Length: 246
Image (cartoon, rainbow, N blue to C red):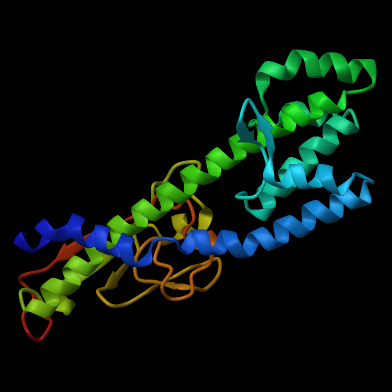
């Protein structure tokens, strides 16, 4: 359809106007993260200067590495728990998929000996937080990019309606879930559900309304759209007459 040649342009425009919603959430979330790290550090008797390095990272070879500012609160708590596992010689450390597996041998040796040196705990914690932050960045980029593409496509149909090339009642939208082991149950429940253009899907988990997958403009929660890989299938019924009959 000719009207969709501007689809990518609309996605880019949406990105310019709206992208950063997750960043805003991170800023709010960071306050909780900082509070958690400081209180946990103080409770364990660590010096404020050392806690500060946990927050912002340490300088190695002229570059700042590690730190948890930039992680959301659950990730930051995971970093703190990983550090505690090493301090307490907890073998659960080896179940963490984002640990630096290159350090497994030396960490196992220290744990069996009954004490992990602080320098090794710091090194492992920095490696873990770097991987966490990298994963967080990938989630943001992927979610925001897919959001822009879907919203751009939706806006393109809205433009066609506004131009008179098609009527809203001729357009239907079907939720298309990825349908693999990583698909959240709420989105599997929506898979195949069809609504009219301008109508809303309702999240089975939170009750939030969404015009399409990853639509956060009507109060959807982060659990409704962050890292969502669903798509929308759009059907235009040109045979539908003015009375809505086939």
